[in-house]
Amino acid sequence: MNKSTSDIIPFYKPVGLTPAQAIDDFRRKNPKYRNEAISHAGKLDPLAQGLLLLVTGRLTLQKNLKKFLKLDKVYNARILFGIKSDSYDIQGVPLISRTDMNKNIEIDLEKLKSKILSLKGEYLQELPVFSGRKVNGKPLYYYARKNLLDKINIPKEKVEIKDIKINKIFKISSEELLKQIINKIDLLDGDFRQDEIKEKWKILFKDIKRDFLVIDVTISCSSGTYIRSLANNLGKEYSGGLLIELLRQKIGNYDLGDVKRQLSNIRG
Picture 1 (cartoon, helix red, strand yellow):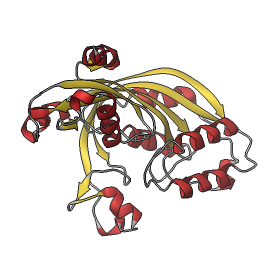
Picture 2: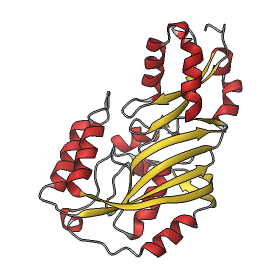
Picture 3: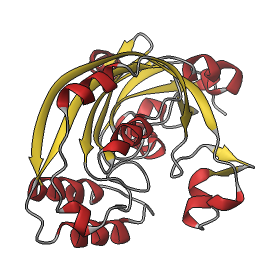
Picture 4: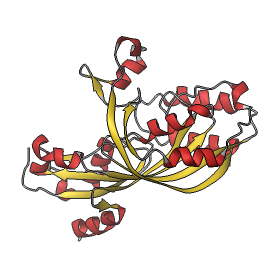
């Protein structure tokens, strides 16, 4: 391992890339780091975007990486109500019947807003089954894909929502929602069940003409918090909750403003 540098690099990960693919992209654009050891301090799902903290050289050693992995995070998230999926976001197979899709769900907005704001504090979070968290040495998605979830205990982990703010509430049409889902899934590069997922979404939305409620929130939370799990839990009273957009704004004291400044220094 080349240990000549020990840099902390705030990097913007676009929609469609895994963190590993983002590192490859960074290497291509920054020849200085082509032969350096690089790791990321904190995962970010392929369909999420925003701040990814890259570390190089000696900082990639596990004993040095730990302090970065434990940093708090800040996300901007858009949660849609009335649909659920096996991954708790749009990168999964929808788990709702066409009959239920046609139903306009009555949502008491004041009650829902109160429920969202009451999330502040510590709680045990059930991990998404389509995640990289390991059980018995294998990632949870391994068991989910092979229909072996009944053979394991899905772990819960203590997390903390330190602050949550509702930015806006709006509606999105079924036509626009399907368009966004297909366009984002088409950005994925790798084996993410894309063909199956797109086909299921298209079948689900065929001839459906209705609007869905979306709530835009900013969440400050501890490391390890899955925002899509939070979306799934919020939607249980409303035929489902689904994460449709996620932007990571901050990791510890690093924010998206640091990305431009850091890249300017590297390329300068």
